[in-house]
Length: 215
Image 1 (cartoon, rainbow, N blue to C red):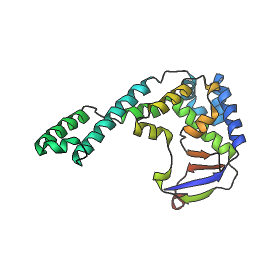
Image 2: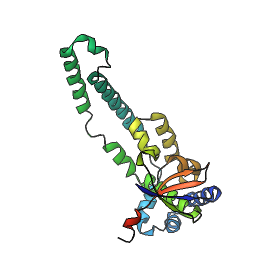
Image 3: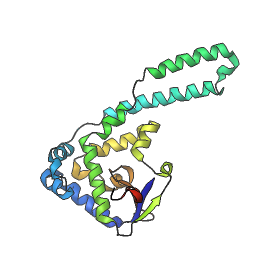
């Protein structure tokens, strides 16, 4: 996939983000600063404090699903001790595990619920604002392997990472002005911004492929 990589000023990124987070008490000014006054209602909803405790329950469920998936794979590839009990017993256990997997239902509901939360959407917009305010104008197109890009929240759902979820919830449940700018820059996800590398001062973000510009 095509992305853009550009240098960014880390101090400016922090300053701009802190500046915007501090506007949490005045949603109208916050929406104006972000250029999304048309979405003022969503901004007000994003500023309001809500509980994200449901995320822990969802991650625990996902972790159980991952474990069942692993057991199924182990049985299929004869990595389980069941291989010593014969094909009939193996098939019976496989059927049982597949039925357990079926009972989990749709696992897409957890990330769908999360990404639709107004606080999550607002912080993503603020992260993109920090990108636009701090990049240094030397952007270059790069065709990269999508698998090498890091998406902390998506990875959390894929791995059922409860420890990361707890740290994430701590930030999401704070008053907006108290949210840690560095956590949002390093551990969150934007609508366009992908990553901020503070070691190299390089930011990576989404953009259409060169052949699609102006299409």
